[in-house]
Image (cartoon, rainbow, N blue to C red; front, top):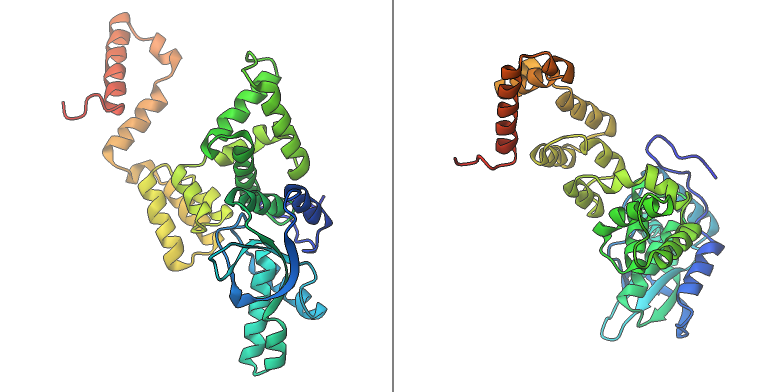
Length: 335
């Protein structure tokens, strides 16, 4: 298996995937009404997909691959529903984007014959798939690709597990953590443990490059990003690489301002890393007086120094610390 680069991105592989066909076939085992047709690109609409990032180099490579082949070899998957005059794209967004760019390129050159050739794409069309079927196919098909970032793969696995376990996506990290502790014997087995364990193991065996317990150890921190950062990734406002930098900012206001800068200035990743580092490593001397005091107290408040104080002084420190704790928890607000 190719190793990921420093951004957690794996090398692009050929879009055609027998595994993808087999997975979709299993998921749609009960759906028999389908057909293979050439569909005009303008008749296809795209809703949010699992894949949130489309690296320029990988996109151009796919464009040139499709140009050389004279068209798309692997059909995209579409869903047609009564009352909708357009098809919903279920899987194959990269292929669709590449064809659109080729059609526009040839149209701009005045080569109408070539533009027409790439204005259509082969598609397997299903009828009346439910939203749940569409979502599971999208997640499953994309998880089999090898160019997802670690964060994209983690979010997709989280969404897939939420569907299969019948919980909210936000509950998946704590559920996996508890399941792993139960498997290690650190917690008493909860009701339904065996069934949850079976579903988790089957999901990871089919779709993940890592075992589920390794995932718990090394990937769950990605799901514990601040909710505003995760939301920005899901909405494609941030890439996963940008998110892992911005999550280091301790304050939601700071993160929002940095996200605005990224969008406004089209900030390169290296520049973003420097900007975040400048905030996180801001010298104490230029911080507010309250922050400077807090930093000095934190450095001096060690158990050894505390126990060396006279009893009366220790009791006074304890009283002050309890008062600070109440204020920081908001109990003293407005008092």
